[in-house]
Length: 193
Image (cartoon, rainbow, N blue to C red; front, side):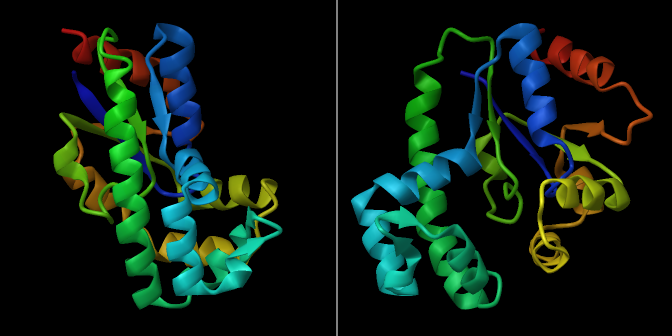
């Protein structure tokens, strides 16, 4: 089973790239952020851990209070590290189970923003990084309705594009000038060789 990590800074276009793999070659993609939210919402052990660390406001009427959780973890490095350690491990366990459900695919993709930040690169056979100019990323995130302070906190918590490039096997440049489909097609061809 070939396991591919797909990463990039917030707003770089990871989901867009993932959809190209899905729509063109039916490659299974595991969306780590979505699964992390699902796990934090549905896994009782994780829920209790969050409440112990962050307090009862972590959930409102049984639903994860994402804004409250984010406000704490992006302002308290110690709490952030504790939370990431347990949630990232739960997500990796979930991914490892998921990928075997797709063992007949030529490869699977694990789309996650924090592969390098979480020191997860050894879990993949290859890593693709999506690189996008900061101005475009900011515009995309503002269009999603994110506040500038939240955007800045998240960008600050992520590694630089230069660092990602240095550790990646493949780079996709998402700058609205280079063809995404051509770049992704070239990667796909190399992965199925």
